Image (tube, rainbow, N blue to C red; front, side, top):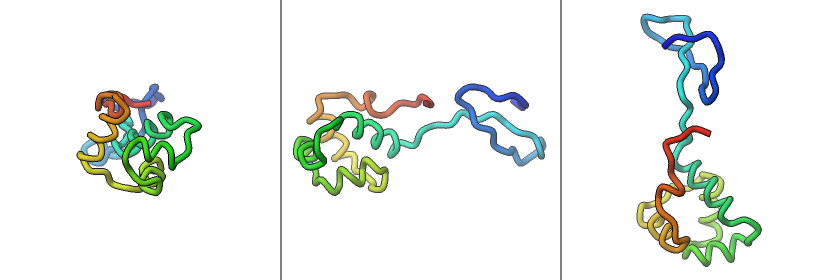
Length: 98
């Protein structure tokens, strides 16, 4: 779909191909590491890194890097976080754009 207007939840990116020099509206998805970072930051609230990390069973430095989306996370760690917070994986990861 070629469009010249701005639509909610989309970002304009150039399309290279038979529609050269046209803009295609593409939904902007949030990367999973960023979704985890956002969720952890909101879940921590005013709690200190040390206290929240202890509750999650990870180090405070790992929590800080996860909140900044600077550290890869294993599925085992994601499972541990989910279990310790009493949530489901769908509470953290969505396929929706902001």
